[in-house]
Length: 469
Image (spheres, rainbow, N blue to C red):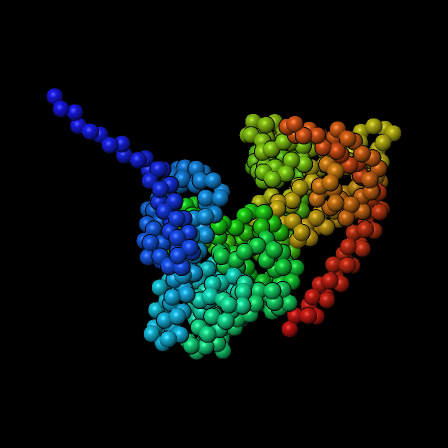
């Protein structure tokens, strides 16, 4: 009786890991040998095929991505970026030798479709002047943005070499009167000139770029921030949630099929906050309870400063909301919520002291704002409502406590709250012990501080508008 030799077949995960190793090795070989593009190209094509075939399967995607150490994931992304840059370099060389046309760019159709989908997110509105941040040496996004809007487009690049090549491409293609190139370091000065800003998926330090957009951008400016979802994170680094703090997500187009780049439509919180409605709850119904727990968990994903060590489960959330509702209905607590388009994006709780000798005191707790709306003026509006409510309740002193050394502690003090005590063993999260800071402010002092802040904000807006052409 003969026995057949069985060769074990590698699992899908092992095959994928082998492909990713080959992609990274090909990128290293190309850099070391100053050549070898064909090997990298062959493996990148296999990588794209894998992404397009598997990305619809969320379970498989999670398995693949979660199994990759962060350094390995970045190495694959860097290899993909190197492949694109090499492709661009070869094409630009051919273009400048007049051997091809700008419209023969290998990824032209891919980016034309991407820009078309992005402009569709603007619901028919067309920009008068656009800025593209972080493009490659071949400014394909800026070119298609101009072609589809007929409006002038500026593009900023990270280094002088890329800028020089892009300028030559535009001159060769007779587009230099419509698309202009400058260095990235010059971006901030002219941010207020644009009503549309596109932040490319390859742009580095998106957090810093978005901070500049918030600080210097024109009010109402539309922001398209490119990112990656699912298995397409093997190609591009996604935009982190913390990077878009201070912005409201207005819409999103998610890459599917053979598309590679997704885009988020953002609005600066300072603009979105004007659409937020503030409301004191009379009761907490089931729908409101779910939203409040969701808001808390969104905060607790990155912070543990609102009384819980991390996101809470449904049972805990239900119990917390039941207790809070009982207190609200009885008038022992007052809950202020901030809503936009039916979604709760902020909350705080006022608890009047029930002792006969302390009826002038109210405690402020669980104040939190959805990260997308922080820094946009919502806190100022909320405190104006707090001051009004304290006067209605005839409460003259506001007290609160917070973990020392946090942004929240700095924020409370920004609104005029003054420390009156410390507690070394204030809170415990796991094996860590945190110091607590106790703060207070009178209702009269709060109102005066709010007037100062409103006056300062008005002056800043007036200065900004005077600088916008």
